[in-house]
Image (cartoon, rainbow, N blue to C red; front, side):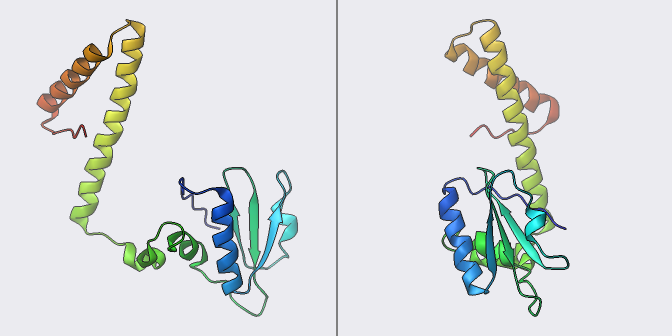
Length: 160
């Protein structure tokens, strides 16, 4: 079993479900809606291939295919990468998602910087709240802490 969580924030649950239904029709998949709180395992016949889409409102869709046909392995990727949702059709194939070692290292540094900035922001907000700092002083203090970190680590933190 594989579990993938993909945020698709700018769409409503109904919009996303509509796209799932469109692709289910394309592959002649049976779709069953699972009411909130019900066990999806009761809806899947033993030995069947299936795909479950779970939404933020806790609704679930189960996609089943006939025993004679193999379930499309890229079904979830194809739905989410479709023009209707993420508009990234090139990403349907996992082979197209590879990046160079240099790009991966760059992304890791960027992620670390963003994570550190988020942690620092939360910390500085807590400090500002505790000692009733006004926004301008908070802003200066935050940038001073970033400057000190730059000096200590030799890393340039991107504040934008």
